[in-house]
Image (tube, rainbow, N blue to C red; front, side, top):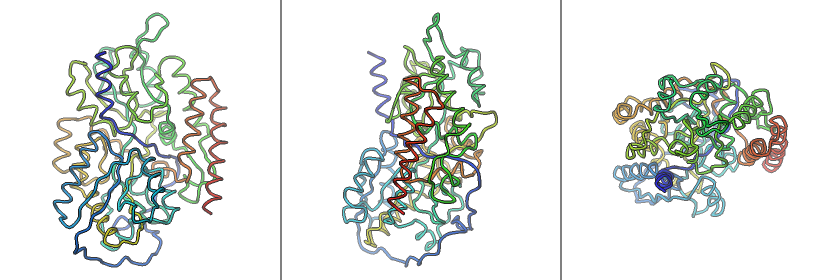
Length: 475
């Protein structure tokens, strides 16, 4: 009963984490002095506008737990700075819920929000709608400097040379592990495994068996396409064709490849051997992490999003009796020396309602939330990375790293990640359908014994059909 209560408390602090695409090959667009892509499409300049009268705007978001509290504090700071702007911060559920509600009310209607937070994989869909104000319009007019932004975050949301939305909450999948379990197994917690081979050797010491039965697994993970996409990027492999949809509209997936097969085989063999604890489909995100505090058949390592890091350290700080020393590490690569991550999370969009005062107030809020000072506070009070490197030298971040060195990993990892087509993320319209196809295939493989080869072929067929349908609808 005590364990179930603890798990329930931990669950309450987690957020829903969205996955993103990945791929490989090529480099991102070069930036100008303002950070705008050198190939930016020429557009009519947005006219200057002075916001002199009070205006109320709605900001739809999908943050929960500690991250919702942190966002509320940032919006309160904004309103203190901009007394003419009142912000209604409205939680709309998960990203998919929020997007569906936006479509239902009409993206350009008077009932649409002035700002909406949407997951990264909706970038192509929102761009194709032609119903948003590109951030590039404001960036060019106000000479807003994007040069200090994390290149992968900035370039993910750049389509056809225009920054479409503003990166805001950036996350990556990481390993959470119990350093005490590493020490007990004779492993150095300061040197976690960096590739699949090292992970297998560490797991032999971390796993606990009773006869032929595994009583503690090595690593807990859920069934999601996000990790598959990340493992592809570690190998520099494409997720969809045409350079991940960056050099032309994607019309087919590319994940049915030797690199993809390597990941699928590792996953299936790991579950069969007991190395991997499969917690199943886990859209809210906590089940793998809960395995760390589960004394009955749990795991020494959990694979999950960095977005949950603040909730995890706060929970364990308040429950020292669990004897868990939390540590974090980058996602291991399928092959030695593999680097690169695809940043997850969400960005901020401004629907093109034609209401100039609302759009201008929305830009003021967006530019505030993406400032160095605010991103430093956001990083320090959530599990998200700052979207700009000049936030790292500010005091809130330095204080955070002194108290919780686990957070430093997040920035170290992105600094070491190359800025390529792989790390900029895949652009395609039916991202959710493609992910669903992969998740179904992984589930068939793990639960019903479908071969990795057949699972990938099945996912490829279903995903390609979804992409064809989408492309026919928008072209």
